[in-house]
Image 1 (cartoon, rainbow, N blue to C red):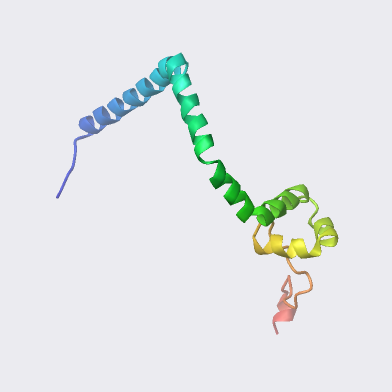
Image 2 (image 1 turned 120 degrees about the horizontal axis):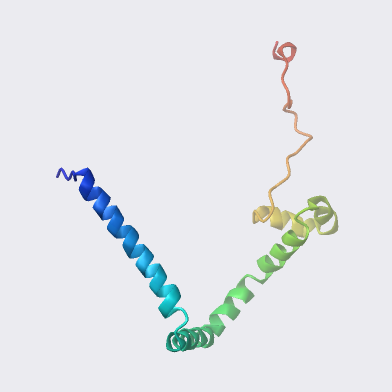
Length: 121
């Protein structure tokens, strides 16, 4: 199926789309967002969601308690990974395993970092 539109039609479609986006943006920010009834509806919906999903949030936290603790350590020591490795060696290995911080490069590797023409022979 060959569907080619003339340039004028494409321009008209784009102009209509831009008008619709602008209209929707203005309508939300000037009417819907500050409407007291809508605000109360949104608050009620969020209250219900909070009360209906308390157990799910608690289960998620219990299931991922260790990972959450490791994320906190990773954030705290993000600028000093050597200090983290020194103070918490077991946790450091898990943090690297979970990719919460990148594994630092091993500087003791036998691969030469620079190659010169004389080392290639």
